[in-house]
Length: 390
Image 1 (cartoon, rainbow, N blue to C red):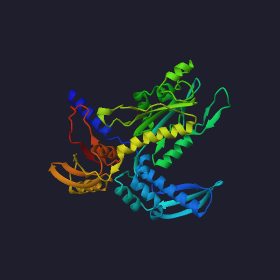
Image 2: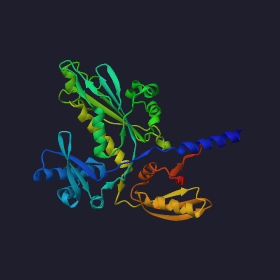
Image 3: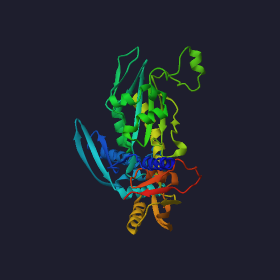
Image 4: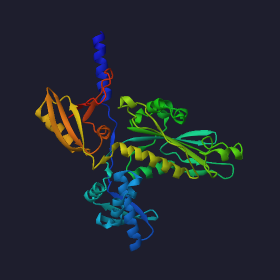
């Protein structure tokens, strides 16, 4: 009986290890859209340069890239990278749609030794809680946020639109919860506001995200207390001027629990203050996005050797398929077979990124599943084992 129990445990571990977070293929990475005030030559030049900056952000993912000297030189010579552009009317606005040359943009990144990310990107789930006075509300994907104070009428913000626009700008797939009956039954606003990782992970399972963001936006309890002027003046971390809103964030990078050493690992960001919920939200998402992109980005000047085992290659056809799959991964420069034993094949990979970034990007593919035995003793620097799913 005990033997059957062990078999069942191993079978379940294989099943759960094979569950993959859905990767989202982000399209139009090398396209951008810019609102223009006119179709004059000077306005067109400004818009084309701005459009290329937007593409650099989507492809590279980090705001700091716009300060890179090589990238800045490329932006000054934006016309070299433009394939085509056209104007279109959208409601009462005129937009310039621009397509850039993918190979030339990638060459620019290579010259700048700047990281590039492929089109497969992780699904991110954002839990956003608004605290308005004494009331806390988890914002859904269609909720309009209304803040009020004692001196003015309520101000309405469409925070889901802010998130959608940021998602498009950075090429990062961000979902917000539906907050329907299923969500209400699975998780409470108290759990989200408390930033309880286990409860939030459990309540997020229906969305199957790769990573989870928790943001708290407040016009009351997160603001520094103002019992007297002396207390405020002595508070070194308090904002220097009276500001209406405060925001803090938390990031669960491994929402699926792939890394046993970091299951439930949670990063907490510093609190920030401002007078615009929209701007505070964009700033927080930008900080978190930098961390996400660093996890998956490919660095053109990196050449790391990394060894993996693929355990169920039972035919020449399977071997060819696995080798071709590995060679086509954007994080892999070259593939070399170094050992074959039974159905196991050991490969040495020359990577464009770190081993950690390679494993993170591999989770976005569904054909090669990493096996983790929950009963085995953890070994430092153990060669990871995968199973091929043709």
